[in-house]
Amino acid sequence: MIIAERKPLPEIIANVRDVDRLLIVGCNTCVAICLAGGEKEVAVLGSLLRLARNNGEGLKLGQITETCVERQCEEEFNAPLAEAIAAHDVVLSMACGVGVQTLAEQFPDAIVYPALNTISMGRPEEPGTWDERCLGCGNCVLDKFGGVCPITRCSKSLLNGPCGGSANGRCEVDPENLECAWQLIYDRLSRIGQLERLYAVEPAKDWSTSHYGGPRRTTSAKWPSQSAARSAMPSKREDMRR
Image 1: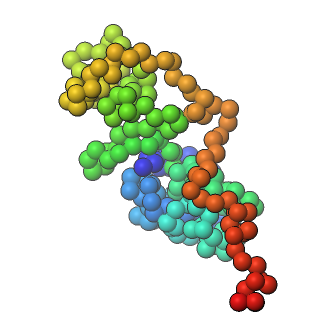
Image 2: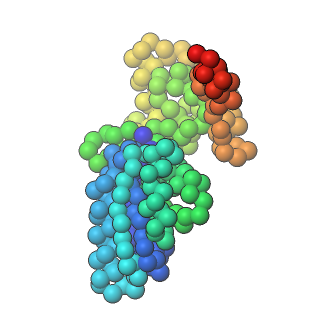
């Protein structure tokens, strides 16, 4: 899941200080799960901005409207927002960076500001704690390393064994909080009987499948193109014949 956290309140206030009609839009998927941008967080941010306004911090904010959609990263869920967006001066998006950009592209005349900082892709470890697990590098190597990603979980993204600072299964970058990824890899491969994988020398990481040469576009062959879908549909004349 995508993990985010709310921006510092002073940073948000700086963007909306002179705004009269503000629309705060939450997202009920990833950022709701990590307690950053769901309905409750939208309500909290709205209350904080009203308090700041009422406490004489120089905010205009004559109208603050709060709402949520299921996923801001998909236009179909944002479509019902059209009327509300047109009726407000600024949209404050409590979605990840993808959701913020989707709103801005879908409603090109709207001013859309982010209320969150997008942190990582990870998994919940315990209530209120999420650990990063994937960098989205576009060339997954989990099959080679026992399901432990050295790109993400090794602080130095080493592919051929631990650095000299690894000690007692801990990472030298933060021994108190970080396990050595290569200790995890060794333990995992040993447990599943695949230690021989460590004899292979992994070449330098090919970052061309990651954020190299601009943003990536992924198209699934399972989905027909729009033109193919249209050509597969019967024409109106054919429908009338039937």
